[in-house]
Amino acid sequence: MIRFDDIEVTLGEHVAIPQLNLEIEQGEFFTLLGPSGCGKTTALRTLAGFIEPSRGEIYIDGTAATQLPSEKRSVGMVFQNYALFPSMTVGDNIAFGLKVRKTGRAETDRLVTEIAEQVELTGEQLAKNVSELSGGQQQRVAIARALVLKPRILLLDEPLSNLDAKLRVQLREQLKNLQRELGITTVYVTHDQEEALTMSDRIAVFNHGVVEQVGTPEEIYNRSSTEFVATFVGAMNRLSSEFLQQLGGSGGGSLAPKKNSYLRLEKVSLSPPTHGSAYICLDGVVADRTYQGSHSTYTIDSNGSRLRALVPESGAMPLAPGAKARLYIDPKSILQY
Image (cartoon, rainbow, N blue to C red):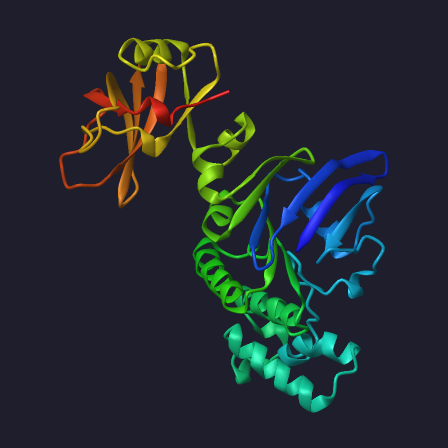
């Protein structure tokens, strides 16, 4: 569906993207993930036609699109700040692109009503000015304005970043459901790892203009191919050489103590596993506990490492600082680089 072929993007004297090769499948929810300034928005805007690459070609449906103007690429764009017209009604905002296309009044009204229902905007809200709506409602208007033109590709540049945490969770679920319902190829830019993991079919992790890994959320999280991906996506424990040596001496013999080694918090258990025999038990001392409702995060000192462990709340008496703890770890869960 979409292919970046040796794309280079230069902004002034700065090479924002040195060489991008990436393929996105038809109907896929594909996320460009990375920290600020890593090149993900530049890649999205290049796909949209707002930035011209200094080298390479972009293909859409097998056709070279690099020289096509933005309006000829059949893409719909939703910006971080929504870019709505505050003096217009919601209905007029959604209909703006249709009017530019000189779509008839009756057809415009039909399409606006149809898309408003899909993004859960009421007829009453269509008559209001955009400035009267909440941030979440304005985000829906921006998505409706992009979708009403029936683009082949929907591009979203951090569309949820201006919303509060609870609303972000609610709207990302609705957005993913809408994308699945419409079957539209979607390219989504975010720096939020949780957003990327929960919404995406596949993810490309960017770092300084370079894609470090492309994969499903499970592959990105559990089988991070580089140290940057491992430490950027989700929380990690950094393991000391002493800890690795102790683990190796207890049966984890394939570990290399001199490598940079990491273990995700939920991979550290404080109770014996109910299945499997691959777990190794090490002693530790509780340094701290943070209660978080459904679980607690324990900080435990063990063999030169300070590890955090996510422990589901079971109703049992919590371990206090200073208490002895036993850590159960599967060496296969440790990532080394």
